[in-house]
Structure formats: C-alpha cells, structure tokens
Amino acid sequence: MNKSENFIKKGTTILTAKPFAYTLYSKYRNQRCDYCFKSGNLFKCSVCQYVYYCNRSCQRLSWPIHSKECASLKKCSPRVVPNVARLMARIIIKLNQGGDEEIGYYNERNYRKFKDLMSHCSEIKRDKKKMEHFICLCGILYEFLGDMPVPNTTELMGIYGRICINSFNISNLDTNIGVGIYLAPSILDHSCKPNAVAIFEGITIIVKTIEDLPSLNLSEIKITYIDVIKTTKDRRTELQSSYYFWCNCEKCESPEPMAEAAACPNKFCTYPCPSGADICENCNTNFPKNFKKIFDEISEFTAYHLENMKNIAYLDVSKMCLSKQEGILHPLNVQHVQTLQTAFDSSINLEHWEEAESYAKKLINGYLTYYGEIHPSTGLLYLAIGKIQVYSGKKLKQAIEALRKASSILTVTHGEQHSVIIEDLKPLLYQATVVDFNES
Image (cartoon, rainbow, N blue to C red; front, side, top):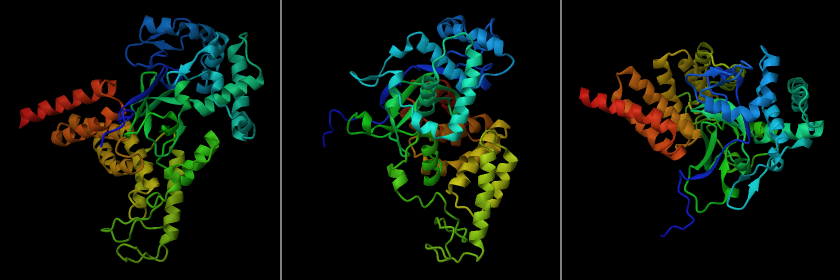
C-alpha cells in the first residue's frame, strides 16, 4: 500500500519556537546563564548582582529586557523575586516595548499573538487559590516595577491567566529549569495519550511526533500538559483545576486496571486485582479477610508521603513506603511507580549509584505502561541506567544495551542532532563499546 504524500513519520519536527517571554527559575540563577540557560563558567551582572551570563553575547542579547528589570532586582536584593512574578514583569516590559505585535506562525499562513492566548479570566475569578496568588503577585509587581508603566488590574489578570494556561516548563533532560510563554506551540491541545512531545534545546521548544500520522493536522496533534503517571481521577482533577477542562481523551475514557491495582496474594501471579476482591480471577487465590483495609491504609500512607515529597524526595521515606507496599500494591500500581520515582531521584541526589540503578530498572515497566515506549522520559531513564553502568565499570555489556535502547527512543523524541544525543549519549556509548572491546 502506498502511503499518502502527506504522511508524517514519527520523529518529525512540526514546530520550533523561541519564547515570547521566559525566566530561569531562581534556584538555578547562579548555576545557569539567565539568557540561554547553559551551565558552565558564568559571570555576574555587575549592576544587579542577581543574574549570571555565560558570555558578553548573552548579556548583550538579554539587555533589551534585563535593562528594565536590572535596577529593580538590585533594589529587591537579597530577596528573591518569585518566578511567576518575574515572568509577569518580563511580559509587561515586552508589551511596553511593542511585543503585542509579535507573531508566532504555527503554519505557513496562520499565527498567534500574545492577546490570542486563552486566559480563562472568568474561571480564575471563581478560583479562590488562584485569586489569592494573583493578588499576592500584584503586590510584588507594583513594588518590583516601581515607576514603570503597569497595566490595569483587568489587563494584569489577563497576563496572569495566559501564564497559568499557556506556560511551558523549560527542561534540561528531565529537570525543569525555567518557564516560558511560546506563541505558536500554545495552539496545541492536550491528551493523556499524546502523539507528540515538546522538548527543549536550551530555551528553544521543539515539538516532535512520536507516532506515524496520516497527515499534518495541528488540530489532531496532542501533547500532554501534565505528568500522566496518575490515576484517571487524579489526571482529570489536575487538568480541571489547572486548565479548566474535563479530559475525555482516549486514555481517560478507557479502563485502567493497573492504576489502582492490588497485588495477588500468590507471589507467582502478576494479575492486577481490584483491592476489594475476595479471590484472584487469574489463579483463584483467596485474599485475606482484612486485605481491603490494609490496602487502603497503605494507599493513604503512601499518598500522604508522596504529597510531602513533591519538592524534595527522601530516600528513607521512599524505602519505608516501598516496604509497606510490597505484596499489597501491584508493581504497576500508580502509587508504587511514583514511589519508585522518588526513590530513584533521591538516590541520584545522594549519589547512591547502585541503589539508583536498581530503582531505575524497576521503574522501566512503569514508564513503558504509563508513558509508552517512545517517550522522552523512557529514553532518558534508559540513558541514566546506561550512564550509571558505564561509570561503575562493571556492567559494560548491560550499559551498551541500555544506551542502544535510549538511542532508539531519543533519536525519535529529540532528533539525532540534539545535544542530549551528541554530548551525552554518543560519547557514553562510544566509551562503553571501546572499553568492552578492549576487555574482550
């Protein structure tokens, strides 16, 4: 069968864009360039002593915006300006400079301006938490911007709403390092089972397909707005509270027996059982009479600690949760996968490499189940496993296998010329291959 001339192969770049406005997260301000987000040898702005640059070129390119905030950043020191407040300030500065006429093309003829982005102001006005946040930000902005022209409250709410609904977390590998507004990519809708992904090269957003598509129809291109390793209920709740829509994507409309599954009492059976089951439908093993109560207690215990570890993952807490989950929560239960993730993250932070490798291997099935095989996070997990194994010097053949799997995924999601391929994956694979050959 001949494929249509309009056929779009997975791995095709369908959009690239520079940000309309963006900011580096404050926690990275002395580790990364405020303009291009690269790390390395940095120097501090001599006036505000707040932002850092990697070279004079980045400082010069950032000056049209930074020149308007520089004195304000110095005045606020040693306080750190909240990330959303700084992004709002930068948008105001840009709009004052005529940025309302900037356009971002999403195809040959159609484009978006900042005013075209959805703001959902009416919903935000009814959202108590968002309104409290907005009022707090307004107080910070009036102080921060000083004598600079500031939009009225209605216009400020429009800016705030556009940030809430349209901003992208700018990531380096799997770490969010900044936030930005991108005009053209804001056209893309959400699905919990996306056919495209948004990745970053520095501050440039790149949207690539992760499935073969019959044609390029942007109304059919879906990315995900949230982390999808959640139950359908939790995904829908987050999307409703953050973006004000009820998700009816294919994934949300389909049963997910794994997401809240219990482990069968028979350790040799991998069937996902409902927590209230009396008997396993697969092997006919009976559940203990009090199993549902134990399951609910452990689920509540896990939920409490996962919520407390949203910002910082603790290895000892993760281990405690995993220990309680053993034999109760199914290995692909969402809470178990989330706990493995916190254990992996904390092991990496503590440089406990053997534990990190162990948790990463256990995470693979969870990633394949919830993200799918072709996804940046799955590829980066294989890359992390391969990197740990290469540096251990003991598992080179395993490392080569993991890195080849990473390569097969990341060349689709990131492209062969992306820095993660050129600077991270290829050198590691070459090193592992050469050392393994010399030792054979």
